[in-house]
Structures are given as C-alpha cells and as structure tokens.
Length: 212
Image (tube, rainbow, N blue to C red; front, side):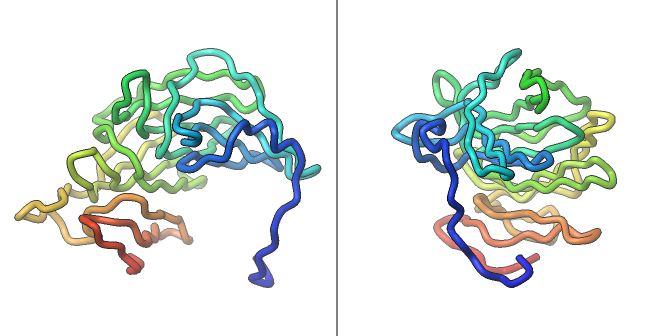
C-alpha cells in the first residue's frame, strides 16, 4: 500500500477452498485471514477457510458449535478474538437473513448471538465497517429482495445492543425521511478517522461513483 502497486499473491493449499467463489466475507485476526461462506459452482457455503499470511497457505478448518446456515452476500467483522457474521442470503430454502453468529477464532466454535434492541431487517449486500475504539459495528443499506435501503445501524459488540442511526429511505419511495446517501446495495463502508465513508453501490439499475 505504500507504493500503490498491485502484485499477484502466490499461495499454497488452494485445494482446501474447494471452489472459486464470490460474495463471501473475509476478516483479519493477527496474521490470519478468515474467509467464510460465499457462492460458487451453483451453491452457497458455510465453511471457514484460513489463510496464514506468514507462509501464504490456505487451510480449511472444521468448525463446531451452533454453525450458521450456508449463505452469501453477508457482512462480517472481527472483534477481540471473534468473527461476527450478519445477514446474507441462504438457508435450506433460500431466504434473506438478519441473524448474527460469532466464531471464536481460537477454538473455532460458533455461537448464535441475540443482541438487545431492534435489529436491521433481513438483507443481502449491505456494507459494514468496524470501529475498534468503541467496539461498534456499523451496517448500512442492502437489498431485501423487494427494494434497497439506506438505513444505518450500529451494534455495540461490548454490550450487544443495537441502535438505529437516523431514518430510513426505501428505494422508489416518494418520501425521504432524511438526507444522505440514497438506497443502495453492493457498496462499501470504510472508517477513516472518525468518519464513515461510503462509496458506490447500485440502485434500480444505476451505479454510483459518489463518495459520501
């Protein structure tokens, strides 16, 4: 990142991944990258694969506990030794999800988390960012299957309490509850200092190149 130069990473253990995939999540703990879920070869996954960046080797690990259903287009965050996963699309019958699970990255044991407060509605392709100073996970927008959203939710991972920030604007709605980014999905949300910066995404066949 210092010289702004891309290079192709050379790694081993690619057979541990089973298939190429998209719409997965990836978080970092120390020198390990944890990849979860995603879509590929006509199906979705709930497997955990770990890339050790010290020796650049992929390793698929068998998790235990209350394992999340297979899913893709979810969001994930790393907080104090745990990987949290929210929402996406999946399950046995294929549905939009708003559940939360936490994986202990040392023991690889999953547990379902039930925060207090009103959670975001089920959705895919939301954007999220994590603030380590406050241990807060921000989740914005996404696609419910019927429409795209621009709501912003904050989950305090210390107290496990949901909080919605501001109002809600729905795609193709004649009224707007608050100013700000329009409804969208497939965008990014990044914490820069004390600001959340949102970029891109799609809504109604349009693609945005505006940074908010």
